[in-house]
Image 1 (cartoon, rainbow, N blue to C red):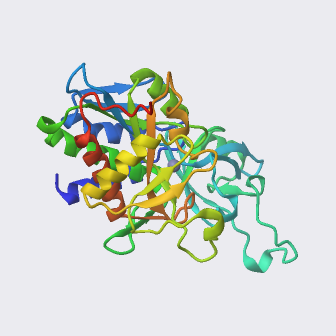
Image 2 (image 1 turned 180 degrees about the vertical axis):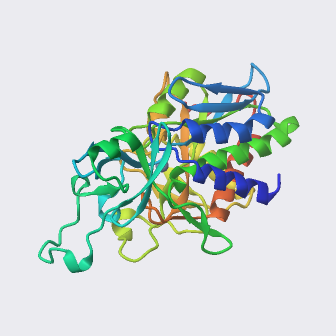
Length: 356
Ligand SMILES: [Zn+2]
C-alpha cells in the first residue's frame, strides 16, 4: 500500500470526529480500511471493532490494540440568550478552550460555533484565573434559547475543528492524534502482516477500542470477548522534550527518537524483553519509560482480563497531549507499527511468556 494511501486514511480518521461515547462514524472509516485484508471482523454493542488474521486454532492469538475515541466536550445547558454551555468529555483542558472553533455533532448534522472569548479590552484585568468549564460557552449565532434548541440538544458532543497539518515532512499536528495515530498504526500493522501471512505462525487481531479516555472500557469488553493470549497495546505518551517539562518528574522521551517501551505495572516482563530484542534485531530505535502505578492507557484494562493476558505498551511520543495542536512524528508511528509487525512475525505458534 502506498504511503499516500495510508496518509489519506490517517487524514480521514482525523477528519471524522470520534468523541468518547460517540465513536461510530470513526469506526466505520477504520473498518472500511481494514476489511479488505482481514479474515474476520468483530464489533460489539458499544462500538469497539476488531479485525483478525486467522492462522490456526492451535496457535496463540496476539492482540494489537489502540483506542479510537478522542476527548471533547458535551452540551450541558442552553441559556435564555441562546448561548451553549459545555462540560468536558474525558480529560479536555478548559484553560485552552477559549477562542477556539468547534463543531457540535447533532442528529441533523454539524453545527459550527466558537467558544466565546471576551475581548481583551472588555476583560476584568483583576481576574487572572484560568476558566473552568462552567465559565465557557459556545456561540452558535442563535437569537435565544428556543432558536438554539432547534439547532442543538443537551448531550450533543462537541469537538475542536483542527484537522491534520504537516509541520515538516515528518511532524504532523492535529486534534485527536491521541489516539487516531494508534488506530492508524494497528491498521497498518495488520495490513503488512496480511501481506506476509505465509510467514505468520500466530493468530492476530487488531482491536480499535471505544471509551479509553474515561476508563478503558472498550478494551476491557473486547479483551473479555476475544480472549487473546498476548496484547501489544499502542497509545501516545508524553514527549518531555519541550520547555517547562521537568525530566526528573516526568522522565525523558523525545519526539522522533522512536517508540517508547514502558516498563513496570501492567507490562509483562518477558513480553517487554521480547519487544526490546525484536527492536534490536530489526534495528528499530526505542526509548524507555517507567510506569509507577498505572500506565494510564488501555493496557491497564487488558492485562488482568480473565486469568491474565501478557501485555505490553509501546507508545508514540507526543507533544501537547490533549490539546488541538497535538504533535507526533510519522517516523515514530511507522516504527511502532514495524515493531508490532516484527514482534508478531517472530512469535512461535505456542509462544509462551510464562515466568516459571
Ligand atoms: Zn490515548
